[in-house]
Length: 192
Image (cartoon, rainbow, N blue to C red; front, side, top):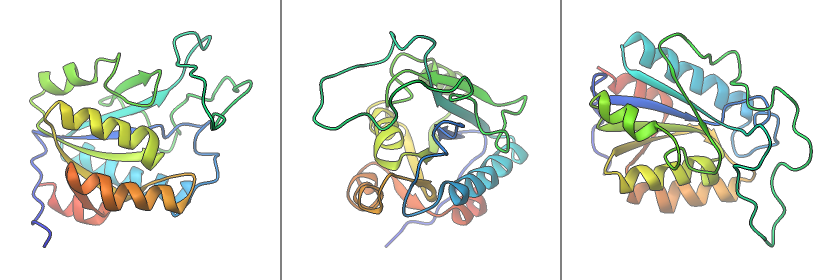
């Protein structure tokens, strides 16, 4: 049985993963990137209206030298030359003046960034996570947040992956072990 969700805007932050021009062009499932963007904008607008902290995370690099390049069996999702606006946050989302921007250089938003510092300075105890891809950037950030002892809420309909199987596995088996999985409208209703 799911617990009733209550979120205090003073101690809750929205952390949006990789809603940027170069990522939202990928073919995703089970939710289209357009659907995820709509839900993410709804969340961000509600958090801003409530005076809650909004963090927009992108992934990027000037020269690629600060990113990881392991030898893998699967090719990278995005390879080759990236357009100049690849890392730009989708304009419909922001950034707004009150948002905090984080640029990461690997999958997770905590490692090598000031995310934990900025959350702790604001007294944030709970983070709501959304973005692309569910099983890569969102899941890695969730695992890092779990190890930093943050309470977490996952906006299932405001995230997606490269396949429905990848999304559903993370939502069904990983996220419930680290926090609560909810839909956008439930999260907005709980923000009081």
